[in-house]
Amino acid sequence: MRKRTVYAWLVALFCFLVLMIVTPAIPQSQEYHNFADQRNFFGIPNALNVISNFPFLVIGLVGLVLCHHGNYFRLSLQGELWGWTCFYVGVAAVAVGSSYYHLKPDDARLVWDRLPMTVAFTSIIAIFIIERIDERKGMISIIPLVLVGIVSIVYWRFFDDLRPYALVQFVPCIAIPLMAILLPPMYTHSTYWLWAAGFYLLAKVLEATDQVIYEWTYHIVSGHTLKHLSAALVPVFLTFMLAKRSVETERQSLLKMWRVSWTKFREGNSTVESYTYSYSNVPATEPQ
Image (cartoon, rainbow, N blue to C red; front, side, top):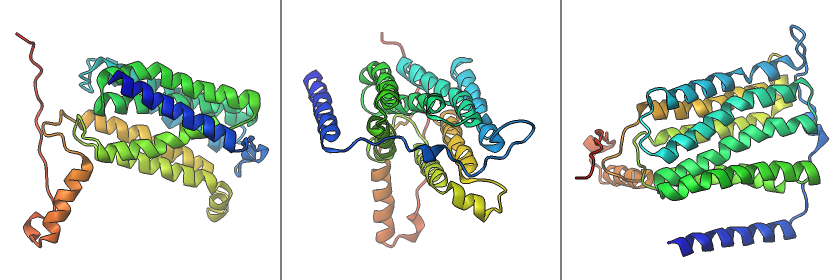
């Protein structure tokens, strides 16, 4: 198993090197800093883009408290606690870093906007490995994955090349929904992962249509401000998931469950067009 893990990392490294060789560098466009809404309120430059980061601070701090106060989320594995702690620290830090950047947008400040987001992204990948593949591998991967994210930011800042950072953002966007659908979950309420992924995708669309939305709303709110609010719903949905979920007694992937429901529907049995699965907690017992 260890050899397979090493081979997988070597293949990933090889693919990354090939990608870096055959693709041109992607410099940071300075137009990125030219946001549609640059209004000042109460002496705050770019006020709405700054203030709209506040939800990240709230949900990040709430998540940290619930992780460590009486184990409210009922995290059964030590690696989970570390992974979710890194995630919520990253979420809370987004509020600080993004607000700092939007007060006076430039490349130097953009580092502090992207750094905490990268910590949150990479932590989520480690959490998925812990929950759905192997606890030990996932726990070991937390620090390397976070470091990969940090290095991608440093590389961009020194070489003005966004390719490694783009990969750090792009890979979780593809891997997390696929893993949520294909791999059997350790806990119930896995569909919350898909809701979180959906709101992150919506946030990227809002970011790309910053000026368009600002015009559509008659200069009331911009796409980038709405992007912050949409992105903040990602940790909100994941927090709801942690609060509601329980141990999965029959580990079935979402894909398998959907196939069962679709098969029943195709058979024309209208009484079983949809299924409700109930689960119960499995108490942990000490080995005799």
